Image 1 (tube, rainbow, N blue to C red):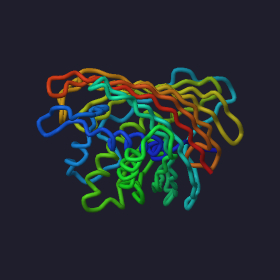
Image 2 (spheres, rainbow, N blue to C red; image 1 turned 90 degrees about the vertical axis):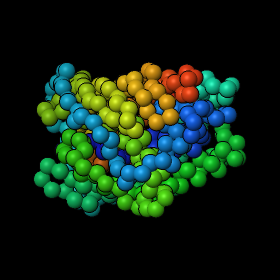
Image 3 (spheres, helix red, strand yellow; image 1 turned 180 degrees about the vertical axis):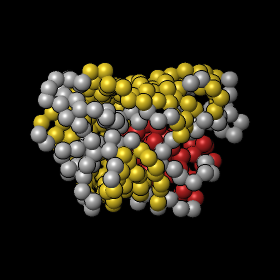
Length: 324
């Protein structure tokens, strides 16, 4: 029995937070000076989103993760890999709350509760690879829970760029991405979607589970080290996984990820330092592409120089994913 959560599903998990940040950021003007009420977040700005000109991509440039087993765990052990039937369809709902704050111009923290549905379809299973399509639905934001009416409409408008967009991804049996492409992002919207998907690809690595190529049992631990490059920023990532539960038809995996940007100049400013830590748990069930249930909690901060001013932005996030 082979099964593993799929990277595109995890991408959807942080897509909502990224959309909200981009919609409310407005950080950086043509002269590089912060605007009144700006909220720089992670080196990403609304200006960089509008300036994106490359075709949308569903993956970020970077190194192939190197997976190393630290402990094979207790017997019985077995191989955990992705194996589902061609034509399989599953629907998921993501519920997320993100709080973002920046130490600039006394801007108060913003809390963003959101929900997003998405559908995953297995379109081909061939040998050691399979193709899946993940299609995003409409984001909803509960009224009166952290956002004023104007900000809520602004976020929903930005999030609308992703509705109907489909990411087609080829995966190997260990959930590593072989290739990916985007459909449904045309015209002016493709520029915004391209930028959003770059951010999604970056953040999805925080929750993706990569399986080792050897049999493991309860207590097994493995580590993946990699780098990714998004919008000119290179990130060093270390992900640690622990198999905490194993049954005849499922598994439970704990995930801990640390991601650090390398200092350097980017559009609109200069990255000084920062880090993001995400911890979570995924419960998988035989026959599903993504986890049947997942929860995570993340905290991060980044310090940038924008127009000669140092700005530190922090965020906290909780997420709950259900799948059937």
